[in-house]
Amino acid sequence: MEIQHNFSLKNYNTFGIEAKAKQFVAVHNVSELRTILEQNKTEKKFILGGGSNMLLTKDIDALVIHIDLKGHKIIDENDDYVWVESQAGENWHEFVLWTIVQNLGGLENMSLIPGNVGTTPVQNIGAYGTEIKDTFISCEAMKIENQEMKTFTKDECHFGYRESIFKNEVKDQYIITSVIYKLTKRNHKINISYGDIASELAKNHITKPSLKDVSNAVIAIRESKLPNPKELGNSGSFFKNPIILKKDFDKIHPLFPEMKYYDVSETEVKVPAGWLIEQAGFKGKRFGNAGIHKNQALVLVNYGNATGKEILAIATTIQDTIFKTFGIQIEAEVNVI
Image (tube, rainbow, N blue to C red; front, side):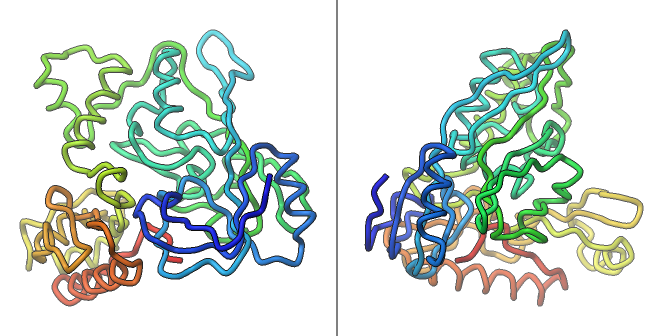
């Protein structure tokens, strides 16, 4: 557990942005994490997980603590459910695949989402009709200030659309060390109603899909639309899908009758940000070393040597254009550092 200085973070963020950490250390268990925090109380700290949901626009003038806690296990079960605890440093997709091999249901629609387990509650990640809050039971977290451990229940996490208490009320106060999920052992609730899953299954002549079938369909869809970060730097979906009031949407929709939307509640509507960006003409555009992916307008990409500031400039241009064109504000899902 050695602290390194002037450390390159290029391989620790999926955008592949070159940025330096003033200091860097990887921790592999709760004891090491506690020791590092105790011994560096006065140091400014930056907590790093899988690096999949951030855009580095500058060097990190702080002690970067990389959470590399590994392992997962079944901690309880009955005839219908199991409770699985995973350490925060586990790769999310690999963990999802493990649950499928065990025939445990609930996470299959979130296959191939980049990042680590520890960040899943922070963002309340989701895909194809499911979100973390659907299976989440609790998480363990260490308070940075005094190294005390606290359990956050589902209710205490205040989950919303890509939101949680960790992005708001207790932001930068806790480090998640493990997460517990409740998964089905039988009578799995197969969800193929969202996106292109049903058509992907039909293409393969699958009428009674298993958990693995759903996962494979999601992987195929994502791979057809999203670039592999190891081949083309990106952070998945850069923007959130905007949720707007129905009364405001009713004013906009007649001007753009082809606009796609989904009812969220009696008073709110979700509009696909990718559709807005594509209609504004950005899909596939390149600006020097950065651009918008040709297959998915939500994804900003680094073609090799882009800086974080170059990618941020593109994001800002997109946001300004969408607002001027449609009167809709779109927010970044990615954390801009």
